[in-house]
Length: 56
Image 1: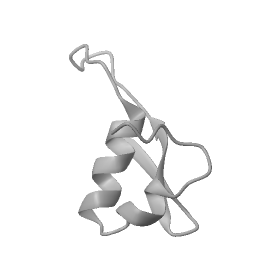
Image 2: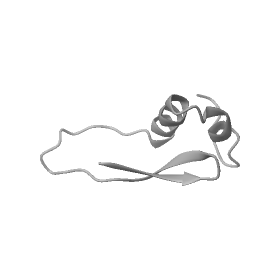
Image 3: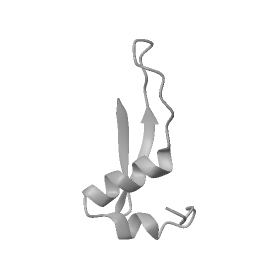
């Protein structure tokens, strides 16, 4: 389960809860946040955050 929080005008990946039954995966929180905000039309605000790696 992924919990998102609305911060200013974009969503932030607040927490990710994994079950022991879930498959082992690697997680890219920055990439996940970008995709979520892109889908919700908030990519511009997400990309203008103070601390971000803008190489995506």
